[in-house]
Length: 463
Image (cartoon, rainbow, N blue to C red):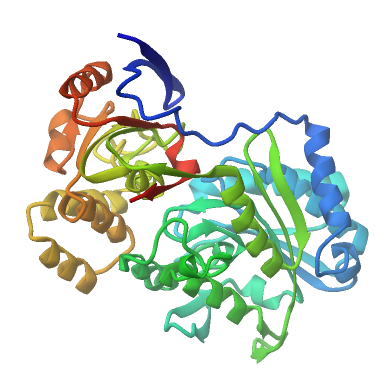
């Protein structure tokens, strides 16, 4: 029997597996590898984008004598943050602003875990460029967050005061496909990025809608893919707060604030696309470029084997779930079987009972423990309880319950997690992925689709 060797990311390591050619449904799906770029090439690409912005004058000409807020992503996203911060500091220093605040868009992430490294990056870049800056690690529970009203969709919006005080608001971002927002675009740096927990929770409750999910966003060029309550609300919030300012006397006023963005599709070592200027233009372009770089349309198969990619995506089932929405659902037939390969070793700073399952005790309680509790309930009753008691993290519980109850999927997991704990949540533990492949290949009742780095791509199914 002819076989093909396939390599699948397994945390920081790799699994080498053999699949019979007659069982394998095409080559392994993975994001297009970006040609590596050295430090100078990456910085030059960003500087070139800043020198030729679209829909805006150069940033340095916008900021003279003005208060500026720069929103950058936190450390949960491993990418080009330090270089983004560096080139934005260079550009701002050339313009002579009156005051600059860098805001780390942690959303509901713990600032002490996900923002301190960003603060060090800001300090290094400020010292190198001679720019005086303040740094704010956003806390979604900070009582100083300002109530600016509700979004057109009814989300109560509380946001960082330094953002509202700025006369020029700058976004330094890296775009990609996203499991709920459809696409992680600049909109997300506002909500959840720098908003209160209540704002994020109200926005994230919209993920219970079947229209919320990957590949759908109001910035998409295809009308049928523009409907997504989650991302429509995110877009509306950003547009809303860009028309609100906080005066020196602490009063909120309606005023169209100047905005500017630097956005790209990138990884740790390269850039696929980069542009600067009007944030609306960047959002629309990012959607096009993300699809160009990492969208796949395939025939659905009975079997799927998938890895979310390396850490942090592979560290806990909470993060691994992202690839269920991004890639698994587009590739699998109704009633199919999936093998998820992720070590789920967990962060060492977390308690043992949390490690590998979730990213915090709270997400363990809400996501994992409720999955264990609700998986035997009828799907409509589980939905009713989640809808009536919604908190952050419960939307992930709902998505997995739908995989089991609506999509009728059997989800096997090869990991370091205790087998009984996986079984309690409805998953099937697998010790030997090669034996899993061989057993299903021998059945002769379907083919296997293999997906690597499933948290970084979009798979659409042909029905």
